[in-house]
Length: 63
Image 1 (cartoon, rainbow, N blue to C red):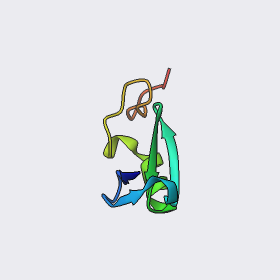
Image 2 (image 1 turned 90 degrees about the vertical axis):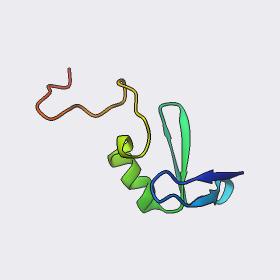
Image 3 (image 1 turned 30 degrees about the vertical axis):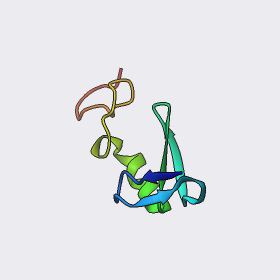
Image 4 (image 1 turned 135 degrees about the vertical axis):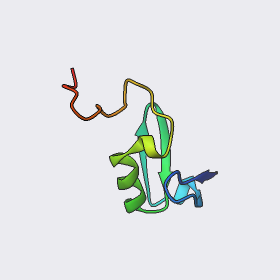
């Protein structure tokens, strides 16, 4: 199955993807470990993130 790497935009095969991660109940596949790491650091840059998983804004207590 062909999928889209949300970080770099490459079309890759999900079965042979170099890396993947589960985020908000969806599996995302990546062409490299670097793309997976970048996605993990700032998923909101690449996809719409729900409030439950969004990083805390600067200055927030996170509670």
